[in-house]
Length: 138
Image (cartoon, rainbow, N blue to C red; front, side, top):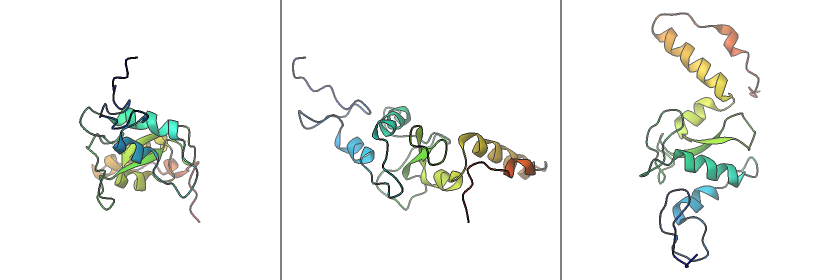
């Protein structure tokens, strides 16, 4: 290679340092502290890359543009485990969705949201969906 800056592999932004792998913004997200466990940084890179739309990051479940600078905003960018407490497969989601999904797998979350939407339209709710494999509340 001729030493030319090729940009961040996640978002394409300038790297600002010849030895940098990611831009400052993406590096900050990859290195975000998780007090529950050591994050899988490669999984975070994959999730961020998948969420990048060319101008910003979008929520995996809703498609809304995420906010990176205000942790009080419901659209604040977070990492969600597709299966709770498994670090290998994560997605980028809005904080409000992450809070709702907390102890649900992707499949459980989608099924419950669909049932809830039907219930709001006057249909019943299948209580058997509430036998949740990853529910860890005490």
